[in-house]
Amino acid sequence: MSDNTSLQRPPAEIRFADELKRLRADDSGPRPPGWAMSLQAARRFIVGDPARDISRKFVGDPSLVDRALVTLATSRGLMLVGEPGTAKSLLSELIAAAVSGESTLTIQGGAATTEDQIKYSWNYALLVAEGPSTRSLVPAPMLRGMAEGRIVRFEEITRCPLEVQDSLLSLLSERVVAIPELTGPDGMVFAKAGFNVIATANTRDRGVNEMSAALKRRFNFETVFPIPDFQTELSLVEQEAGKLLAQSGVGLPPRRDVLEVLVRTFRDLRDGNGSDRLSTVMSTAEAVSVAHAVGLRGWFLRGEEGTPADVVECLAGTAAKDNADDLARLRRYLEQHASRRKGEQWQALHQARHLLPG
Image (tube, rainbow, N blue to C red; front, top):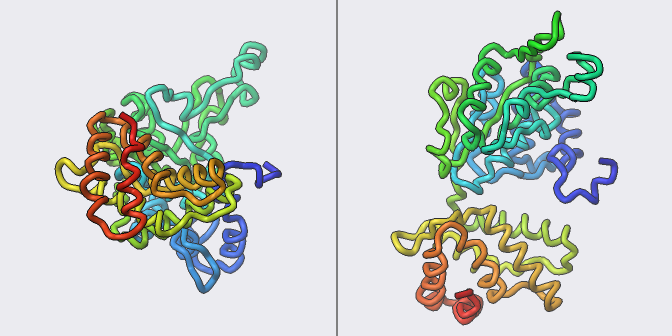
């Protein structure tokens, strides 16, 4: 990982290494056992501190960050729930980078996730040759997190089968991983100070593999809500899309008036009533992805900034994911609502409605 400039998305501890270094150097607050910095410094890292030239990285309720950090200083895990695209994973990454200095101890939940991917597995060539030993043991994130006293991130935990979820019960209660294949002290790995778990779950996945009541008791639940303010969401989309476009070799920043149309369209389709609301996720994260694609189309196809016509072209793939009716709703929005809004870019969006497929 020596050449960080070639990484598509370095982890938070690399992206913000300078800020983390400065915060630790100036940190005089009390630190929970095993933490790399105090709660006050971790909070500054996440929500920003202009006086110390620390950028704001999470656009959300600062009190949510306070509650999350306090939870992790206890013996309970932290569960972040909310709609897809509300920055749950980003928040868990930032917290892990601040608390542990490392955010890459991550388990990605899914239907194929196994207990081996959570606790440990074996190097079978060494296992056959030498038998069970610490040399043949391959630690998974949970075992490493306990042994090293670090935060473990469990993404999309409700996508995992129930028996896999329940393998966390004893880990979170007893704070120990038993390895029955090994004898003596090596057969038990006890959690060091600083270990804890941040899990995330989408509210749209509720009921897929609902967590047991026993597992829920091991977590404090915090809901991450969508950004309520238009200007805040617009500024975030502009900032993040600008970064992505620069990384993609695009020589022009996104046009703000085009982004205003894009973000307003997303908010209308996300919050609209009845037939105007799309069933697919129209999140801020999706808006950033569409803004990125709009800029790429304009630059690489025509050598200019993205236009409302590019917005229409890119919206089709975002809208028509889960329900065929969503494309019809998007078409109706462009025909009926976009035409009534004032401004050159809104009229251009309306005129480009024929670019929708079908």
